Image (tube, rainbow, N blue to C red; front, side, top):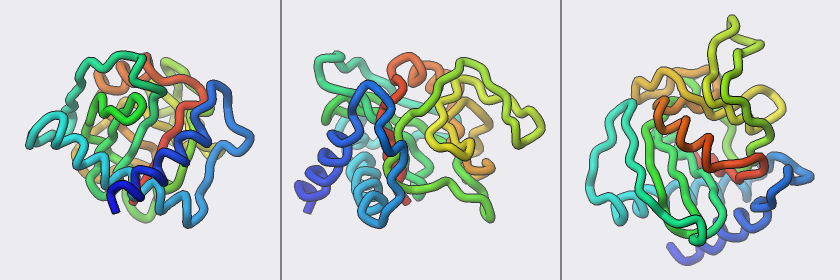
Length: 183
């Protein structure tokens, strides 16, 4: 089963791992949501395999050096664990606590790509709120960025990350980097 999930995730990543924005910037089909959910489940185990049984508290992250030759970057988000994972190829590089949408708002699930990056951005929807190291992933304003990270859902839909992690992630990703968000 794990091999099947990895294969599905690899197919999805291959489909989106081009250096430019794909023709379809987000895929929110049932199949894409299942692929992203499988990737999130695998990422949790990969984190334990790479970093041990470390308990990442709100606002914390783990990062290790993995050479660029390991492959293209992709981000995997687990809504159920409130965690973000960075991969290079099939190798996990980092894991961080996050904070996603608090009901009734939602963080969409499926396969996305970074559409736009800005080192500092302010929300047009929510009182000019700061969004440092913003990486937008859809046409409706959902983005990964540095922000308040209480260890539980608390945003309007964005994926808030610890500031130092968001800064490092911003440096290694590019427009077109795949982002898989699983429930």
